[in-house]
Length: 146
Image (cartoon, rainbow, N blue to C red; front, side, top):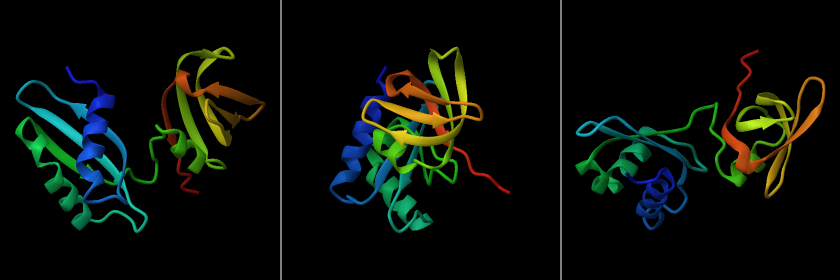
């Protein structure tokens, strides 16, 4: 079984030469044998449209032998995976789930106030908390519809 990080690297490498401005935000691999699904979430400085998704899908044709490939924008509630994603989200509301408890809890909702090389700081309702990046299992921005 190929690790997710290896799949992400392979997808990024497939796109780097032809579409250097396209950022691979995240990759999901799912399904079972014979029914594998590869979801690729991309971002681009000028936005993501159907034409760009089609171009990316074409560049990922090597993956089509073993997977159904879906390419899309990550949407308004974006996953935060790379240190740069966290830096770009400073000042925004985010949700974080950790592998192990940090200060007695694993789920956090609040505003991201700082993103360093090895940790983030969040402002919660009643306090500020620092979370090491290596402890973050999942994180995403939260869009407030109000």
